[in-house]
Length: 347
Image 1 (tube, rainbow, N blue to C red):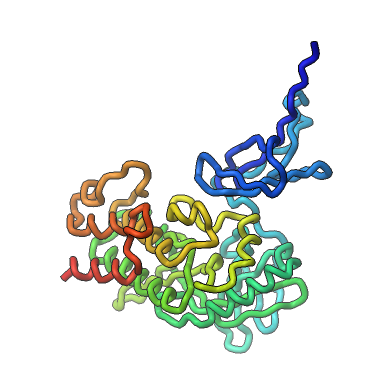
Image 2: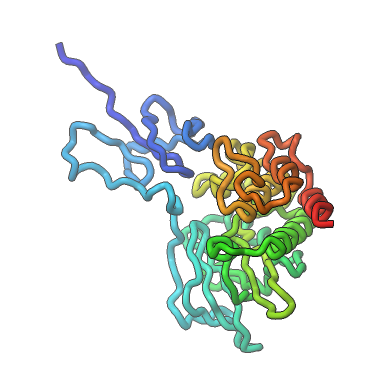
């Protein structure tokens, strides 16, 4: 008797790259990842193979099998179409890249009219081909342009030239908060001051209807003002969305990357990244606070912050743990509430 086995159809979670056999599902059906908890859409294709969705014959020789996708700790899909150094974009000259991601590449640049350094975020060319993305890009630029606060990186300009969509931001000379934390020896007074600055910038953005969605130490720049101390500036609102606005374009990003970074994402954001409010940023801010004061992430059954760091005032435990409540209804409703609680402990 011949036993016919079903051919596996393997798809990886777009957030953590866990493998799933989706052969029993149809295209468009939603599957929940058992590893990270997000839902992703099944994509079945009988006519083409891709790096993230491929039909795998277990009996095929290894060299004939499709190449595996990128590792989970890398961006699910990196930007395509980068600009060579010296390219001019309507009065701005592109210099070396500062960072790359799934949505685009950030370059150091120069504004010719004022001869000042700027940061230029150029969107990936394959995204620009999609009308839905152009709408999202314009909304994002408009939302960022409305932000004017010393703790938020300011947007200067935006434009489109041929296949390039870009916006221009102020250039901050300084390390990220991630690098500052990793150096160790951060004085408690400095740590508290930086935390309060991030809280002020985030609360201001929320007041303007903008949710960051990807708050983490890599997205906070630290400028050294000498005797005036350090200035924290939140950057990369690339995953921001206007509160209470039309969310029809969110599906575009959902198929490309998971909105946010898994260790900083609120539980509700892992379930439905397009339907979160400022309380998701409250959770991310709580993760950052725990990391700033202990040097570690609050993973699994984590200890209270003052247990990890005996130098920490135990009254801060309740503040940080409330920000980290898994249930959004039990969390602080606003970042301002966290800042007020931190200031009260300081006093």
